[in-house]
Image (cartoon, rainbow over all chains, first blue to last red; front, side):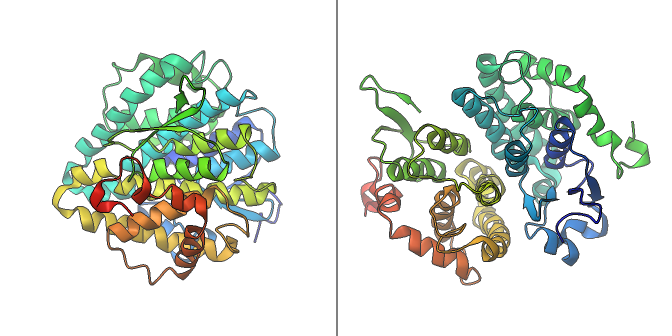
Length: 218
Length: 191
């Protein structure tokens, strides 16, 4: 049950899931071909909750990646595994302190912002979901803008694309989706714009996935 | 974390913060002496895994991540699940925002997270979360179980989590770092 019959890795993904997008970018940057199985988080009460998917990933979340005989979930754990097993091009700097900065920025987005505005939480919050999402993204971006002022070059940390950049772009997409005013975050905005010019960030974009609905397709 | 004039690392820590506790365990396991500056936190930043990975790279003994790449991925997956999938949804700041229904909210997210975690651990666990060596995943587990108990989550459905937690709490590093034994632990909670 490891990889598809073709031997390629299989990614369980939702077009609009920022966690799935991070992994799609990583696979694209590293030139890893894979099969994609869409999991719709809204249809049928949420296909991620179906029994068949629970066998794939007990956490009932996307992304999940079947690769090399194992199934991994959690986008950063997947990206770190890809980095260790397919090291080129690098997604983590060689310098230990810079590497820690990349991880710190990634953790900040992945633990400190995204979970507070993911689909399931907003469904639970109910009516005030927009205000809730804006609150947590704004809080998170205020802190992130300060961090990036110290660490950024062309990209989040110095001048090489790293795991932090893979986390940044999907989070900015969410910010825009929830109508967060980005004017207070010039560093975030600049880096996001620069990253979106790269092919890996384009081919992996939510508007270009097999499961992108027609009305959102690029 | 920074360095004090003595050259020792300085940890800014809150006695009851699970994020701080994870790092305290790591420092204890690696035998790193440090100065502690208590801070009263309303926000847990969740960036402590980056600190632990840095400690692992710069002070590699004893290991907190297995050498095997697939096991290492499992350790990170479990750690991330707790640190991104459970803890942020029940941290202090969020519960204050949730207001009245905070206990129910906390219980909901811990229960969801533990249901999934119990399944994963059934596959990965030996004596500890992944095989028989203490790893970063274990550093994440114990503080989360402490939170579960604090929010009165029934742990009976999670025998693997419970067993591993109990085994880990026998280790000195998990005891010296415990919330009931910190410089800023209030008298009524002190062990």
